[in-house]
Amino acid sequence: MSDESRSFLRRWSRLKRESQQPQQATEKRADEPPPLPPLEELGADSDYSGFMHPKVDPDLRRAALKKLFSSERFQSMDGLDVYVGDYSNPEPLAAGVAAMLRHASTVLAQGDTQAPAEGAPPEAGVIDRTVSEGAASPEPPVPDAGKQGSGVA
Image (cartoon, rainbow, N blue to C red):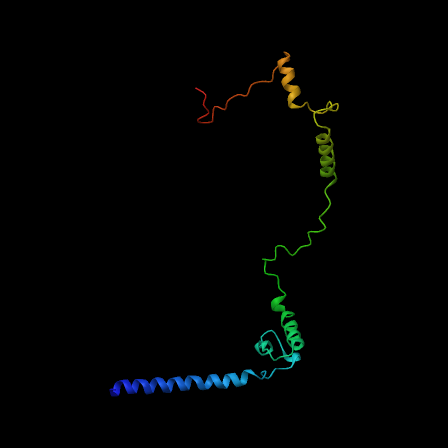
C-alpha cells in the first residue's frame, strides 16, 4: 500500500473512533433524567425539554406542561379561532320571521287540494285559467331599448 492510502485509512479510523466516543457518553447519560428546575420557577421562556425525558415521572411532566400552557402566550386569541363559539344554543328568530315561517309551512302543507285563503295572491294556475277564459291579460313585457343583443330586430 502506498503512504497516501495508509494516511487515509488512519485518518478514517481515527475519525470513526472519535465520533463513537461522544455517542457512548450520550447513551450513558440517556439512562438518567436531566436535572430539572422546580415547578415554581418555570415561566413562559423556561426550557421544558428536560421534562420530556422518558425517565421523568408522568405526573411531574403533566404538571410542567400545565404550567407552560397556562401562560399568556398560549391563552391569546389569534383570529383563527372561528369555531370556538357555542353554536348549540342559537339566538331565537325575530317574531316576524317566525310568523312568516309558520305561514309558509301551513301553505305548503295544504298543497293544491284546497282553495287559497281570502286576500291571498292567486297561484300560477289560477292566472293561467283566467287568461284562457278571456279575462284581461296582463301587459306584455316591454323590451329594454338600452340592452344590447336583446334579440329584437
